[in-house]
Length: 406
Image (cartoon, rainbow, N blue to C red):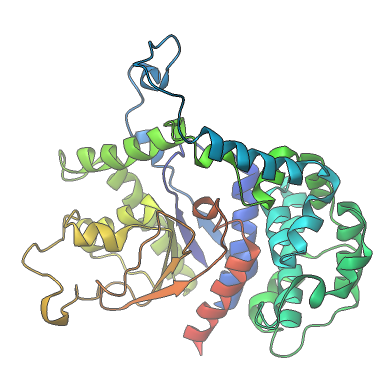
């Protein structure tokens, strides 16, 4: 079964192969398994469009404030607030071997997501680590009713017995070895993925390696603080966000078939051919700016392409349509009288995932007919970049995908 993943901003090449390996393993283990894919025929396409956007002509000189003369006045008014957050961050960093314990005190799934997002190792080790995290997520979901019955030590009393992060992972591994999913949990979404990738007894090596990476920056994530949020200086990532968005639209509007659209068309054509060859559905997952590009592709440039399941996460499609930024946008069509943009005839199902903590995620169902908005709440300040390496995201997505197959 083919799946096309379309990335968002700040991706020039596969700069983080570990992130990609974990992401693709989670796709295979969850949503593709839920749709009944043949694991031996599964393939994930990742067209890297970011490298086709112009690079900065002065090597980011616009970000350099060194030597700049002060206009005058007091120091940045946010400095005091930033100091408060620094204290909170240091409180989490004071015990670096208890970062996961601190997270699990609020939510065991939070700790699992931190592990999965930090996995390191070979491709096989990463797959094994992702499988471990996926099974742990199903264990958490069953025991807590996906958090509805509570979380942390109140639901998992053994959390109060562990004294450091190594012990936490060891105990979680023991719990998983003795746990057997119920019929409700053991749908094909999870079981097929676990059987395919397998998990040896004990904590996978890739998960153990996480403990060496959890430093003060990870502790800041656990405390949900981080003074950088209040220090409003533009960063290279923010600059790339602006540059990639404007660069895509400038390129798209100067040529009917831009190099980005051409790259996307090629990847989609290959994926469609693979789907037809094996008689399987085509799944497309688009993150952030990738969702806007995919909408342009399917609504204007390549309406001949058919997608069985489109998943958009942390995207701005609803906002961009309200602003009439797409090539297919009709400026005469507004929300007056309850009107919506007609559903794309070449997309069988569209799930739009929004984390309320993600400032770059927008709803789509109020604008587009056929769009299903799904709330995926994490409350995390890193929400925008955390969708595709979160096993909980993949677990919930697989359940929704399976519902569409019934």
